[in-house]
Amino acid sequence: MFMKIMAAIDGSETSLEALMEAKRMAVSHHATLRIVYAVPNADEADQQVGHTLLAQAKVAVGDGLDIEIQLLHAEAEYGLNGIAEAIAGAANEWDADLVVVGTANRRGLERLVFGSVAEQLVAKIDASILLVRPR
View 1: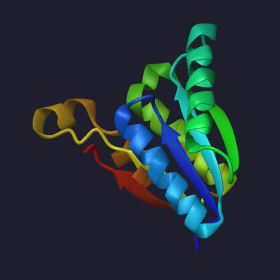
View 2: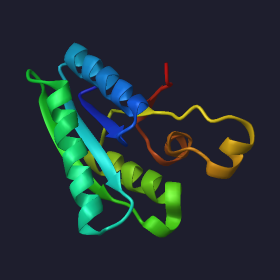
View 3: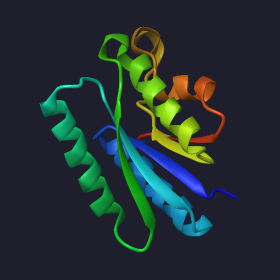
């Protein structure tokens, strides 16, 4: 049973789909839902974007759930790996049972060059992971 569900968002349509799936899982398991956003830079403008996205995500989920939000700080020089590290660290620290994340569904050379935060999370966290693909 999942009692602590974490949804990692990035402002994309796919992350919104993942958030809605996390909401469904949280409702069905009577779980706490924590929504996280990893800021790739520590400057004030990027942090404001993160706070705005988290507030919008909380509104999108609506009432009736125990919802927490958390702004994470990623090491910008590590690119996607820094974001994955920040999300994995937060999931492990919070002892999440399930992490729900959207995946960009990259293929071929694009996947080789850019990689995937979702793919990296599989190796970095102890919780179950639900990957939501774009529709």
